[in-house]
Image (cartoon, rainbow, N blue to C red; front, side):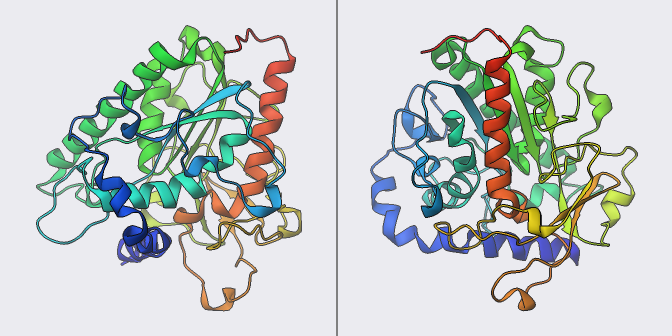
Length: 351
């Protein structure tokens, strides 16, 4: 039942993006996508500094904040936006699927990747993401098919990152950021390219949100302990205060959980009055003091959010809003970590 509720919430958060289909579909139809990504072609990037895209956006209250291009890069891996339940559908999204691409761009790239434009250039690859149902077949006959779907998706992400490193990075420091399925892939990317690797010196921080992260999976990379820690991992999963899902209770480890209002492993409970700003359904508006945040045994609890109409809204799982609830706090922290990284003498090559 909770999985069904989760799916419904995903459809709610993507509804605004889907309503843009008729508005934007004609321009997407002109792109001429293939079903094998070629990351030398900008059409296979949902966000890229060499084109105008929704990651360049800002809520109106932040309109005076320019997006610098000379500090660090952000490699953002978007969550599942392949939600189509009409039959037949494949286990991996087609890159030709215009509807999915629009939901990606005007859902997650707008509402999540845009947080990071304060740091510098944002890169977000399109990839043949696994279908949302890939998270539900564990223990059933489709498990191996789902695992293969995730493997194909990761290979696209890896290919995009390798292209970025070879052609665009030029020695610049970077942030790895992700949500949900994107975090499934980001965890692996961190292990393969950063943990105990020379590239770890270029990692400002990783914001790996919406998925459990076992700290024992990494030997060098550690959870971020303070608001200015660098070369470390921030992570959280957001649920209603008092709600611990069954699958969390069955986890054999305590996941990394960062409080996205305090950013300190010593300050684990923050009231909503100290939340500087949330982005709700209207991206242009920032609403302060919507919710607090409480660390609880590997997850993040929030009390009922406060905003107009919130009395109608009380889900147990706030996964879809992991970033939106703390939009301005995350953005401010990104700027703080970048400034710390650049001020302590890390090697940095301007492009």
